[in-house]
Length: 302
Image (cartoon, rainbow, N blue to C red; front, side):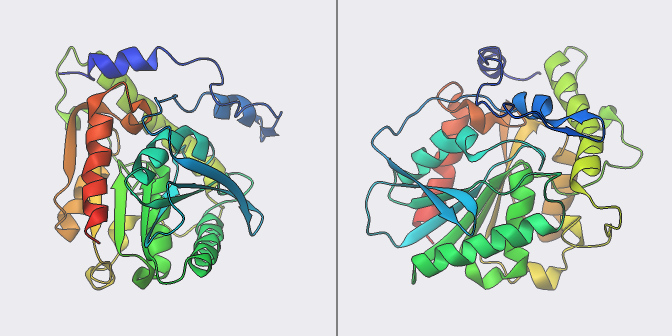
């Protein structure tokens, strides 16, 4: 088994600097951050063209609002992935519009990237923005979702004040901000011909070093529940209304995600044939739409 041909085909359609994220020259400790950021993100298809979009400035942070009607009672906070140092809400825009099409108001936060802002400061920035969104939308139920690094940040923000959120959805989340010890790709049980899956998993394993360099301060605390989500206590986890976890079949982060789900008795949903980041291929792979539909159905019930 390997990553689905539909996903591989969609990956090959990517243009250089697809979203213009590498426009500004930025060198940090010898690293060309602009070039690194330009390599992140795939363009999906727009399946919700009738959804309205507004760009807002909340506490100096760019936030996008997606909706089809002004009167709403459920807000979805969306946090994009990108290794904490890259990505942008525009990459997940079509996914956010697709969710909004079902009657929710989605706020996508373009939080400050690393190394301009580092752990744990990023989560406090997002938390402050979320509190302002809640002030703008009193009496609404609030859900928070995030993919990859955005999943980690979603849990961080929810940990700061669990009662704020009626639902949490994590798409292939980063669980721990450090590489696994004594890691071996054989742990994934891949077949010999799983060429693309092996390449993707190996790439993400090595990306963790870059995350540590760009996102972590020198005095970070490895024992913090914000650093490693597996450090959350059972008592703290019980404060959450509901946590949903979506996994890709072929993903470096799966070993940590499985540890996390086992500790908190979460029944994770695994999408076969998919690799990390598969939501970005909405409109190209049916699994992306299926995963969003699954979340939308649960959002309707909160």
